[in-house]
Length: 539
Ligand code: PEP
Ligand code: MG
Image 1 (tube, protein in one colour):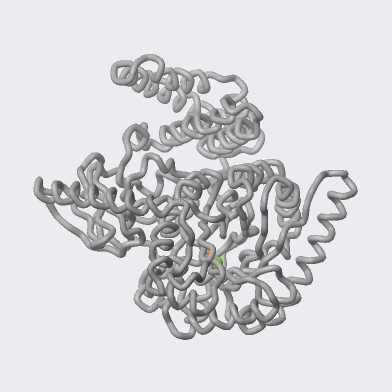
Image 2: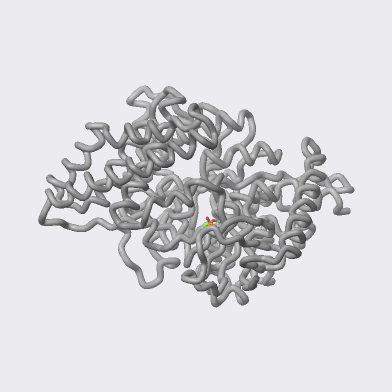
């Protein structure tokens, strides 16, 4: 047994087998090839190997879970024989002269999206199979084995680092915990871990070469510790604490349906943050009053091209339908900084956090923005939608946005497509926005304070830099004063103001936020009931 410490980003506890994820496991690079036929031969070989692996999995599954449940592996084998799928890869290699890995990833994405857009639920579900198959092909092509370990059982993922796009692609049901060597506690990967409701530690000095897949690991997010090959006593202790956690969670269940009301009768909205359609279940399960932040850019990550209008419309509509009358606030694209998408060709920057990101991209490349706004305005017909704009620093930006909104409206009108322009809010994430919040309040229906970035820009501390985690202090009086100013500006203009940064779930500050008059706190779904408990004990 040996232990290592790290920074906890989600305070849960988990026990399970390790799955080491090497960086190269996840990335597919586009390369030029001169010999297309050789790349095609590599695809044929990788597909043949994949079929053999699947046959073994099929036989194992028949023995363990019965024939009906094993059929999926047969279906995967059939996809590998599908002429359309194979031809799509060969064609791309021949015409674009790309490497086999890239062709597999691109064709896989294309087919997956096609399935995802179908009306029939069964066909929709085939998108995941397509991705699974493509990943298997890519693993075979790059000599990484069949990855069956990861695919077979829920595991503790141990990696050097994880980017938001890598994290967002993972099958959440197969992750017990994350442990990474690098990574900051304020990064989007950390936010995703919180969202997924799984214990996660970053900055753990683990030597990946020493970890074997399948080795038992305890991840203790409360103590900030990882225990490898634990003793019997340590395992028993961990199991006991997991049981206590489960009991605590069960007690919180009693708060479902109750109000977020202090003892003196003040109420506040408690909403939840999500990254995609798949998170709505957690929102409902935890009885959040609405969705205070849907980070729409997660739809753009981990793929080879941008989601089109129809795909976005379907995603937004689905979230709205699932939420019924409850408010859903979708933030427009906030890509850039740590959230990268190669196909947008954003380029390398010296200071990405101060660079080409969020609304700046949308205003410079209005076609991307307009596609999203069209999808949002159409989806607004299906529920209680609001939208908000990230990283605003000026009145001029709001005027430019208003002009684009008008254009989109006119286009939809002319095309006779049903739409509605939803409530529009501004995210207050920069000191500039705070300082002009009085003027901005006149142009917005509400404010949502993004304290993750507001802290970064107020304190001049890169939220991605793990070395600065000790300096990154969202409790800094300057940050709290910024929040207060923002809320006061909103109220002076009869608008409401919420907090959707991670600090909204900081129970030490709940009382102070209520005193400031914050109208809404939007937190990860797992924190909703905990926050309700805290609010209800405040005088
Ligand atoms: C924030 O900055 O606080 C925020 C909510 O947005 P993100 O964390 O996605 O940048
Ligand atoms: Mg932000």
